[in-house]
Image 1 (cartoon, rainbow, N blue to C red):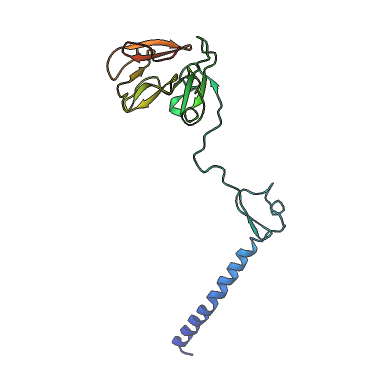
Image 2: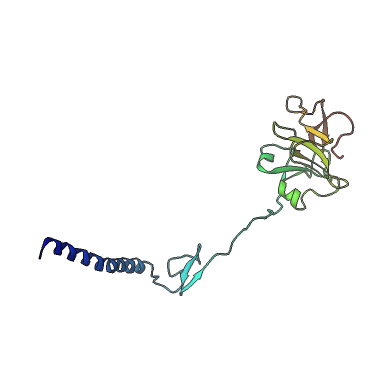
Length: 202
């Protein structure tokens, strides 16, 4: 046989054997996926499954836990204003409860979403602190909420309302101008820019 004939023979043999080699590999890989038992626990999965598991020829799946729009359960924590234990940068806010005495006996810290999207801190006389003072990006504003509730929250501006300030932070600062007037509400010292009636309900 000539050199060209041998080359053609090797090429034909390679083309014929390639699919057979792929089948052998596929069968070997498939053998590794065969479960020895007839249930997920027998197949080495404790107590059911952690995702899709083939059991008795069927696919077992875990239902979705949360698809968005979830409001966490209302879990109040004691608070005496906004601090590391009730941090607004972590989405928290302090409820100065209308039912509190002057020491803040019933004040509670909530997730802000619990207040704005659920029923936390929504009783008459409640004041929800979502911020104490303005920052370089947004203005912290006192604003009425319903007929007998107030809150502070960040806005682009207060639209003629009252800016909030923190009298404990270097005497307070007001980006809209004016002095920071302190007032104590349910045991918590807060502030507002300008004179007039304190925005915190007593």
